[in-house]
Image 1 (tube, rainbow, N blue to C red):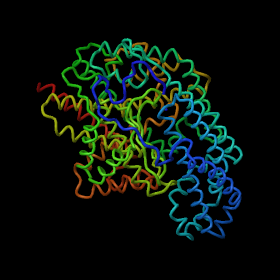
Image 2: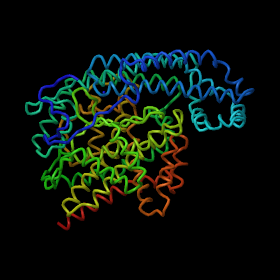
Image 3: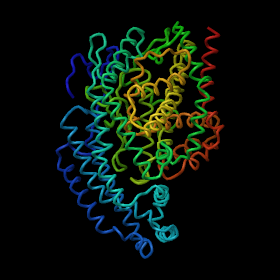
Length: 612
């Protein structure tokens, strides 16, 4: 997202050196046999040729096809989907190769070349959606009614037309598209490669970002502090680069928004997520009002457990003093997740098991590998891949459950095809968070004593706070950054002030944040790759809290409704998908219901404290 680093822990070793077993590395041959394979070169060549031929065949003719030959228009959509799918396969492969080692010059070049070639091919396809959107409503409606094949694509066509008010003249759209390689795409790569090249020295050991950040969960407070200060120092030393990237991308977004007519800094994200701004505003307002009842209340309790009058940012994810921080080997983590999935629906466990059996997961921490975790759907005719940086922590088990939830969702939605399988971010997090919840509940039921139950509840509350409170704080930070950037460039100090303000408000008065924390905004990849993505996590968590409550009270048939929701992919609006469960995200009380689940877990922790 490999060069040798002295004293780097080998793959298979956890944060404290335990053997994690045989950690899998993904096998990408289902996409292509190799970077220099004839199959890859053939598909690149074919994509360039077929996209140009597609433009020559259909440009300027779509309205006529809609009027005189609806079947011909349907064939055009099918051709478009096929070309897009091949291009998606190429970019999925190149992106996954690059993610595995962003510091390898050959892989970076391979990825960059793929981007350029697919951008060139895509420039020939750009006219298609723009021209479709210029067809009169009545004419397009008649065409869909006149062709069964075109009718199948109705959800995609209707979804596409929501972009129509923000669509620009074709030549401008083409310019935006072609310059993305040297614009946003280039700055994204600079961020990724800069982060991957950073080295942090803690107690004489040189670490990449992922193991260094992992030390913030260490039992030894001095170790956490040393890691936190080193992370802050290294990020601050690189602040000029990160600040320039942030300023440039914020300005780039402002230019695009202004030309397209988006007035609010997050409006384009809301449109992409197919969620109404008032729904997001209700979520943010509910979470912000709940800061005292959730994060402030929990961290005040945690400070007592840790014996601290004030907490620092390196105490936020510290393990509980009496809790044994178990390290989970890979096989044990796999069994935990698959057992939890199977308890809900055997089909869900069966799909997830395929990821382990067929090497669709890349788990080890390696120098140069992108930090974090994700599930990438690739293209429907292949399958998703999951990337982790597995260190054996309880949170790593939950991350595995989370990403496999995405993977199951992506497998089920694949039947919708390339154009309609992609789910808006707000709903994409539903299956992943639900997978986490299943795994947590399964483990909680096996807790052998109050101390173990308390430790598990505390970890879950912290995960929920990280998913809901922290992500909404990120969203508030991004709003500050993008709104302020409209008035001119921002300094590293300004960005740090914005960060410290929202972190202080969200974490609560028990924290006396060290000044070194002011540079931590700079390592969050979502700010760079997907502006305003972050509220989707909170949306998904609150939604799943409500959904899980329905599941606990549901009659037979919940699993079927749940699978139907996942299989729908991007063919339905969130209101349609939630209706069978009696849920309505437009109702402000919906969000408070979800937040109430977190408050309930905190109350359970307080009750355990009182009893002990």
